[in-house]
Amino acid sequence: MSLSEGSIFYGNSEIQFSVCYVKRKTLEISVHPNNGVVIRAPVKADLMKIRKIILKRAKWIIKQQVYFGQFSPRTPARQYISGETHLYLGKQYRLRIEESNIDSVKLTRGYLKVQVKSEASPDKVKKVIDKWYSEKAVLKIREILDECWRYFEEMNLGKPKLQIRKMKTRWGSLSHRETLTLNSNLVKAPKECIEYVIIHELCHLTYHNHSTGFYDLLEKILPNWEKIKHKLEVKMA
Image (cartoon, rainbow, N blue to C red; front, side):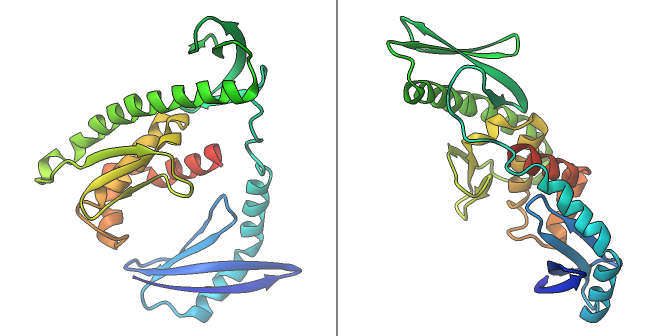
């Protein structure tokens, strides 16, 4: 698999794109939520022909970029005050803050009910919520990993060690020592999105790169993985 980059102009708009050459018969154009344009093309495809096809699809590409643009910024900065919304497993919960003699978090009837000792300052509320998210991430992500592992049990693979922590730019990774590291923020995403990230990384136990074989295995296990990936990017952006 090889990569190249380029750009074309359509009217006053510049469309930058990346071309990924893979073993396939047809050309596929994808527009990602970050407005990136990725072309999956046959290995021997001519770049000039690819550019002509992109130009023909330019109106559609720009339309997709405008569509994704309406979501930016999708998630406003959290103020940790009553009334704002927070995600858990893909669902929105409205924050309700109460003073109490204990620190606790509960989900109840569409609310994320946070009880805090002493003064309920935004910093204190954030600390309590972050601790709750971290605890939930360990429980739920480990549970979902166990469910996903059934797809790999018959492949004679060693189950990787799980590590959950906050990651700035990635949802997950698999080290050469077969340690699976997952972003604790995944607990805010829909369950199917968590499954996608886990299955994606577990496929790297067999294929250590994004080869054709890797995508064949991913598609065999999760035929609609591209739609789920799109959902994750839009929901969590």
